[in-house]
Length: 55
Image (cartoon, rainbow, N blue to C red; front, side):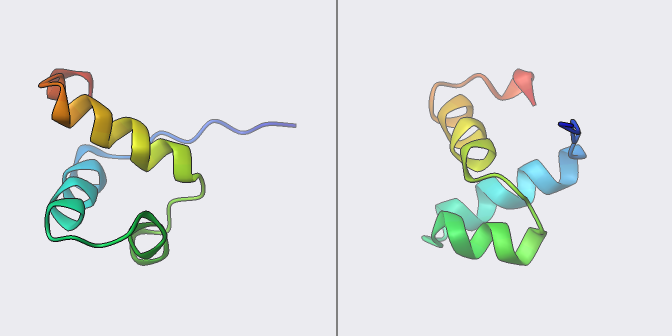
């Protein structure tokens, strides 16, 4: 059974800040307890494209 997780805006913003600081996706996942690597990559893509309204 798959469980959907909705992360709060603060976690998403923190992940983007950490990515801007040069941290790896794995480090971000560990520190913010994010389960899926693709989630961080998706947020990063949205940020780079200027689609932060999708957060």
